[in-house]
Image 1 (cartoon, rainbow, N blue to C red):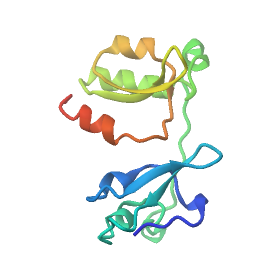
Image 2 (spheres, rainbow, N blue to C red):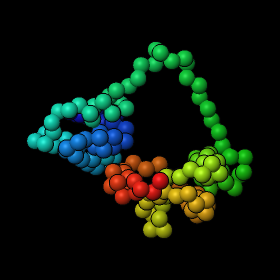
Image 3 (cartoon, rainbow, N blue to C red):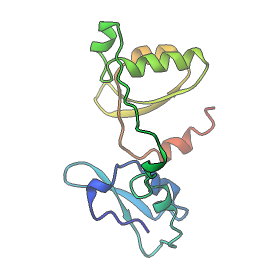
Amino acid sequence: MIDIADKSKCCGCHACAQVCPKQCIKMEMDYEGFLYPIVNKDICINCGLCEKVCPQLDKVSSENFETPLVYAAYAKDESLRMCSTSGGVATMLANYMYREGAYICGAVYTDDFKVELIVTRKEEDLKENTNFKIYSGNCREYIQRNKDAA
C-alpha cells in the first residue's frame, strides 16, 4: 500500500490511483494546491500495484545506464517561441505528429482560465491552443470517456 510520508517523494502523476483495482486511492489537494494519494485502508487489498507503478518508489537503477545526455531545444521562429511555455518545442513536436497522422493529447487553458484536456488529430486545434500546459490532475475519467477516440 502506497504511503507518501514525504511529499517530495510524490510527483503527482496519479499512476497509483489509476492502477488501483479497488479504486481506493484518491488524490487529495494539500494547502499548497498539490495533489497527493490518500488510501482508504478499509478497501485496500494490499496488492502492491500502486507501489510497483510509482515512478518515485520504483526507481530504475542508473548503474545499468551510460551517463545520461541532456538535450535542450527551442523553436527558431521567435513568434512561436514567445507564445509558448516550452520555447515552441511542444508545438513543433505536435506538428510533426500531426503530419504522421497521430493523435495529440494535451492540457490547454480555456477562455475562463481553467485547464481542459483535449485529444485531437486536427492541426487547427493546435493553432488555437498554442498554450499547452503541464497538467497535474486526475486523468482517469477523461481517459475512460475518450478511450474510443483512437
